[in-house]
Length: 253
Image (cartoon, rainbow, N blue to C red; front, side, top):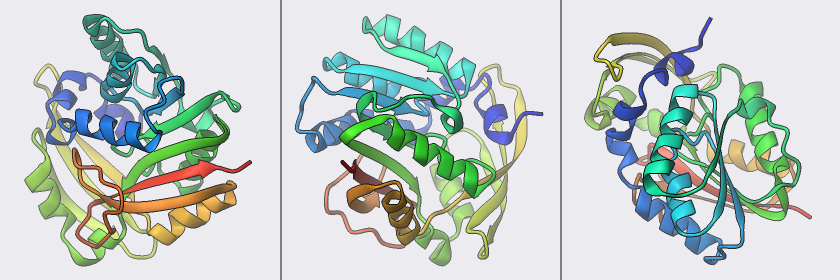
């Protein structure tokens, strides 16, 4: 039986590329380049790469990039887009909960949730963080975004979704204060125009939780900022008005 996130990203690649939250790729890549001092000798792992929008842009700039995603259809589209762009990216279908990379990359990115926070248990989400850090060389840089638990404490997630999703409709939100999980129904059309409805379950994280988990994984220099798609900024204070948080950490040595 497929989980909701597997169902969503089956035959959804072209629709995904038109979503509002995917339109800020250039600025997001430029921000990450700044955070790694523009060193194009660094190898990059893009976890939950989707259709490859960040991976392909990094490859255009001369980086060596590997992109992994759980969805075969997303990876197929990513390969097509890389061919169209004339760049080489090592795309592979893989489950971030079970990666086997060991100190293989200088940088790991996991953007637009990238699988993390979508899993159905906290243990699965933690496994993704663990594997991302394991994939980094000592002093490697880990940059990711995740859902901000401060937001649903003061805002309506249903209103946010209604205002920000281009294709589809999200409804029936129930935020569980004991688990920090939002349960909802999401309906959308796939690339063939067929409507699907999925029971979604997403985990929102408090910044203190993220800090604790990363410290447990021997990360250091942890920084957390407010996150707006297409407007990544250093030193943007995280508040309850940010739907996501932007996290940067360095692997210990």
